[in-house]
Image 1 (cartoon, rainbow, N blue to C red):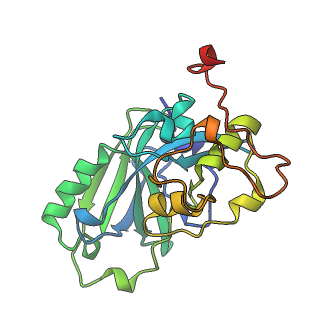
Image 2: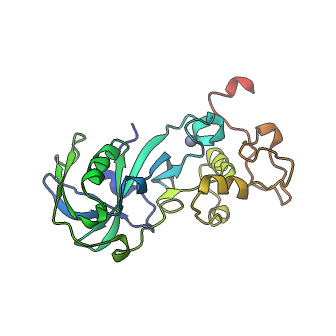
Amino acid sequence: MARFNADEIDNYGGQGGGGFFSLKNDKDVATVRFMYNSIDDIQGYAVHEIEVDGKKRYVNCLREYNQPLDDCPLCAAKSRVIAKLFVILYDVESEEIKIWDRGKTFFSKLSSLCARYNPLVSTPFEIERNGKKGDTKTTYETYALDTDDTTLEDLPEVPELLGTLILDKSFEELEFFLDNGYFEESVEEQAPPERNPKSDRRNSTSREPANEAPARRRRTPASAPTEDKAPTSRPTGRRRTIANQDKF
Ligand SMILES: [Zn+2]
C-alpha cells in the first residue's frame, strides 16, 4: 500500500504549491476552511508514487481509467495507481493554503459537508486528530464553527497542483525516467500547467505533424518518434517491464 502517515510527510517534496497539512499528535486540532464552494469543485487525482532525488513524489498517471495500461509508462511498468484527494485548505491560524493528502474515501466525507454547508468555504471547521503518532487507524473529525460571509475571493489563490505538488510528465519523460531513474531537467521546465493537461500534453509532445491521425494514441515502440535533434540521451521507447520481457 502506498500510504504514508504524518511522520513521513516530510519525505514528500514538491513545495511551491503550498505545504502539506498535518496534525501530528492525538487530539491535535486546527481550524481550517475547505477551499471549495460545492462538491463539483473537488477533484481527485490518479497518481503514481515514485522516488526522485531520494524523495517520494507523486506523478500524474497519463491514462484515464478506461484506457489501456500501455497509455501510461508507469502503469505499463506495473506501478500502482493511487486515487488521491489533495484537499485544499486554508489554515486560519497560519493564514496559508495547505494541501491535505487524503485517500479517495474522503470524497464522501466532503460530500456530506458540502450537502450541509453551502458554499463550503464560508464555514470554518475545526479538525481534530484521533489517533496517536504513527497509528494507521487514525481518523479525523470535523466540527463546524460559525458560518460567515467569507468567499474564495477573500482567501489566497488556490495553487495549481499539477506540475508542482504532483509532477506532470509526458509519456516520453516517463519512459526516460523508467530507463534512467531521473528526469531530464530541460524537459521538466516546459509544459505550462493548463486546465486540461491531459489532452494538452499529448498534443504538445507530439512532434510529428500530420501522420498521427488519432492524437491520443500513444506511439508503440516500433514507431518511436524520429527526433530532429541530436538523440544523445533520448529514451529508446522500449520499456523494460516484466510483463513484456517474453517479447524481446
Ligand atoms: Zn499510470
